[in-house]
Length: 483
Image (cartoon, rainbow, N blue to C red; front, top):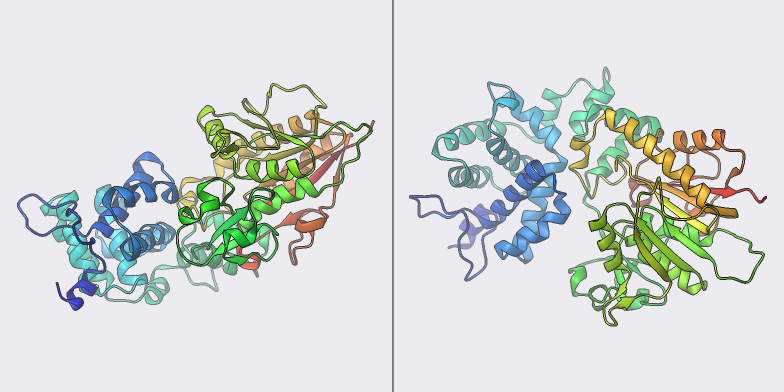
């Protein structure tokens, strides 16, 4: 194949790879990178998988590496991020509601639209490979439909399509932003309420930028210099990986370092940095109440070990508790790392611990995840406003129970990967109003010094993708009043 033909196809399998998805009766194989992206979209749609978790398995099964893997990753992730925009465009190009289009065909059309409108793929290559993919995975009949629809998509640029299909920005900003930045309208409204209408466009735009790979060097087990990369701005244990795969770093492979957003690192550090006075010389006891999958627990355990403390990690779902245990295991020694007292599978609202047991408790509460849309773009399409009522009730219960488990004078760090006010200020304020034995204290030290990070309540911290390059983590520190 000539270099020009290879460029037109976008990407192809490496030498010796068996062609995947060859349609019956055809000698023309389906491009493996595009097939991988198609399978990611199917897993997200059918199995409710997370793209960032299922993608490595699909790439490995199809034998994709290097540029092919990068192409498949951008195609799958970018399509999920921009799905709302592309659906608005496709709705204009199709003579029936999108709900009437076969799901597999719609997946191919979205992938094709992303190539045409947002990737450096020639129109004819994007269309022909989409037609090939349709023949292989759906059938000959829909292939002509895909060809005709994508030809219509190529007639305008992305900006021209947004100008045509979105409401007028001056008359309906939130409606325009929902299309232009590919977020459900209710999400736009909730984020605007949290960050301010003057900042929401920048936030939505940042949600659509793939995040850098950030690693944590777990103190006492690895160093920043050993892990390599560029030091992060705020966490003393973080580095940004400039190239390559984390799996190729010895400290990561051995579990002494791991992939972790800088915002999540700051959550663990904030709990460890909080001042706690003790009347006795006994070592402190820490608890991670909602520990799965264990990234924050691993950093907390390392910090606890440095302070002579011991961490208990609790996770409701047994399979996720297994992930926590793996994160807290010294892979070389085959035993739990220093600073760990145990891993428990228990309901955080009814945990198997006595009241007033712990000095420090982390409540990294289940939430809508709207602060991590850079990493999990499909979450924006899965959540609905009805989810908030259920989640807020659970968040209140977890925080209230965590305070019961904390000894007088101890602290609870409440965190969510969502800036939505109902999940942040609303939960904290509700618990404060119901309890006379709790006070909200300012977060100091590392997290408290991050510029432009004031949260919705005095002393709380709210991180933002567009300001800090982190997930939109919310942090609040509550102290159980001394008796």
